[in-house]
Image 1 (cartoon, one colour):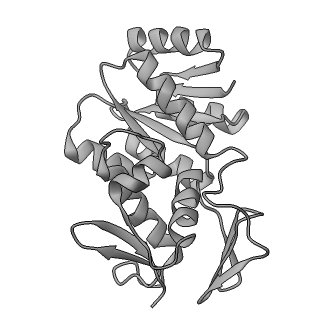
Image 2 (tube, one colour; image 1 turned 180 degrees about the vertical axis):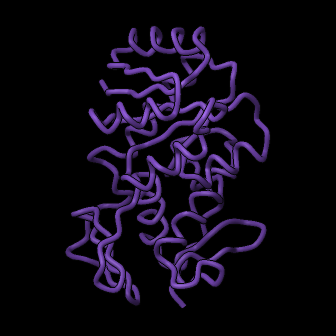
Length: 230
C-alpha cells in the first residue's frame, strides 16, 4: 500500500492509528512532534502524511506549510474538533483533507485511499488531449500532467492539479461546490465546501497574477466556480 508518516503527540491515538493503518497494509512511520516528523520525512519521504494540528513545539499548521513548501506530498490533518478556524487554517496551510477526532480508523483509511487515488496515474480529470492547451499565459498538458505559467513550470499538489484539470476541461462551464467535491475529492455525499474554497484559494495563489482579482478561476456567487480566462 503506502508509506504513511503519522505525526501525533498523543500516545494512545498514535498507537491506535499505527496499528489500524498497519492492518490495512500501510507501512506506518510515527513521530511525536512536528520537528521529529520533518526530520524523518527528510531522511525517508512518505507517500502521505497524517498530521495532528495540536502538536507541542512546532504546531501542525507550520508543519503543514513546511511540507507543502517542499513538494506535493498529500496531507490529511487531524483536528480535535470541527472548529471552523482550525479547519480553514489547516486547509489554507496546504492540507488536502481533514478528519475530526475522535478518529474512526475506517474513516481515516477511506480518506487516505481517496487522497492517494487523486495523486495516482489516473490523476487527470479528463482524457488527454492531442497536445498542450494554452489559456492566456497558462499552458496545461493533460497527458503529461504539467502546468506552465509564462514559461515557468508550476508544481501543483495532486488535489490542486485535479481541480484545475476538472475546471479547465469544460471552458466557461459552472461547477457547483458539490459537483467538485464529487469529481475531485470523490465525496459522494454532502461534503464540506471549505475543501473546495481553500483549494481554489491555494490554486489561485499559483496561477493568477493577482489572486484577489482572478483571471482564470472565476467565482459564481451562490453556486461555485468556472474556468474562463478574461
